[in-house]
Amino acid sequence: MSPGPVRGATPNRRLGSVRGVSVLSPPGRRARPSAPETSRLSSAAREELRRRLLDLIEGHRVVIFSKSYCPHSARVKELFSSLGVECNILELDQVDNGASVQEVLSEITHQNTVPNIFVNKVHVGGCDRTFQAHQSGLLQKLLQEDPAYDYDLIVIGGGSGGLACAQEAAILGRKVMVLDFVAPSPQGTSWGLGGTCVNVGCVPKKLMHQAALLGQALTDSRRFGWEFSQQVKHNWGTLTEAVQTHVGSLNWGCRLSLREKAVAYVNAHGEFVEHHKVKATNGKGQKTCYTAAKFVIATGERPRYLGIQGAKEYCITSDDLFSLPYCPGATLVVGASYVALECAGFLAGLGLEVTVMVRSVLLRGFDQEMAERLGSSLERLGVRFLRKFVPVAVLQLQKGSPGKLKVVARSTEGPETVEGVYNTVLLAIGRDSCTKGIGLEKIGVKINEKNGKIPVNDMEQTNVPYVYAVGDVLEGKPQLTPVAMQAGKLLARRLFGGCLEKCDYVNVPTVVFTPLEYGCCGLSEERAAQEYQRENLEERVVGFHILGPNAGEITQGFAAAMKCGLTKRLLDDTVGIHPTCAEVFTTLEITKSSGLDIMQKGC
Image (cartoon, rainbow, N blue to C red; front, side):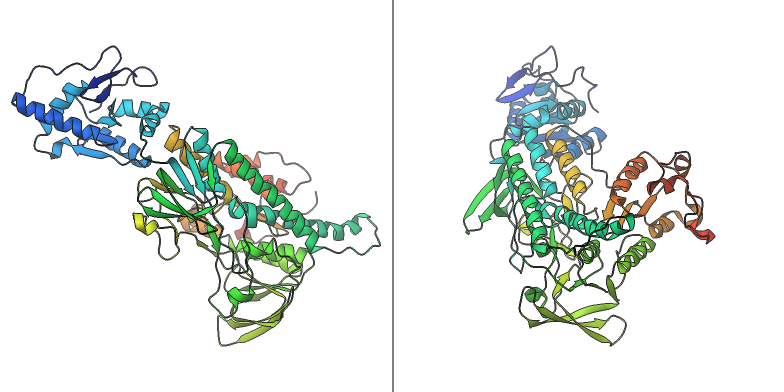
């Protein structure tokens, strides 16, 4: 059982001393000396038991006196587990002298029930008091009063999720360190603080996407009456210089933000050497060890390479493309991921010859009808697709910037082979989690050996209680920057701010930034049919998909509506904005199964 609720937001802070143990006493009374002996224990045995209990409390950071069947005890254990705090738990129903222990414990604390919790020698109380202390921040303060570690939190990885978590923890008054180190790509490309999104992902990709759209707008402008005789051409060097200047400003902004929040930043590779201890190795090979009460793994992913001749020697990835010092020329993009199609789209939009080699389907995991429509839009832009082929060798024909490469590819459906000559080969076949080489095996953190992903519970907690993970390293979670940032902030608030809110990974919107953008939120048609059965689809919107201009801006608004329980009836009752692309969602009448033409007729 648990004591009844206590008035006020926090337990009373008056402390009474019992043999060196601080006792957080109930309002209006202090801890009193032992009551007269009432059990069968002799005076000497009672004093010996008291001494042993006090030694137990003094010798451990957190002690929980519990009973294995008590639901209130279970709640408290789950709370400390979610905080990554190791506890010493004594189940009174499973020890021979449990009744005597509880009796003597009652004399010390004036609490007759379990759970009975001590944190750093301070008696917090029972279940209700512990949760009140957690919500007020007092519990975190008591837990912090342990000088054994250099930091309250060390984040390994300086990407979006890691930085969000580190900064939020620092705002909440914790001592935080970020370890971040970027190993150069096989082509020698490296970058600064901020992770994939800032340096070689979302940000430079969106800038190049915009550059391609501007080129298309120039072509379209003649039909709108614009006349210009000068030949318009694109300068790759000017674009990459502008992109890298912007990226550099964001790198500096990340460092400045950490400095303003007093977060220690070390440009070094972090590796666990033992429990609660990491070794940081900088670019010069210098090593320093740091300890922390808690750790967050936010190391992200890096592009995968094909295990074929010439892959690492001559091919590039998205790690290299956005700072490539020369125009890539005729480019073969290997892969059908969103990274592959986005790169193919903006390269073609800049006027380059682009071929995409596809092993199986476009955008695996996305709605396949929309994926094929996106592919058709790229073909209309001039992108050539080579389907059902995989490269088996990349050979250098001519050095240069760019040079010439011969690619030999084999059909996935038979013995047929093809050859092609390109200036650049861009690999976009997937990404691998950066969880190897950081010492996780030394402290027992489990990873999925097939993909390197880290399994976590709904608190982003690994199987090692004081180690957490956010971002692309998580198994089964969306690999998106805003998701990592949200998860990182909420994790810090749960660990150090008394917050209980968890990251919601359901109905997360995303956009493929091809020239004709593809935005989606929720289930694909295939998943919806599988989960709800075709004859049982509801009026509630379970999946939203749009292929069109500015799909990202449109999808963001509809994602919020889906969080609020968007239905077809609500869409029908909404007056559209005319003329816009998004207004079509307020006038939907034709079902796919009807087979009728969906082309707009009239206004």
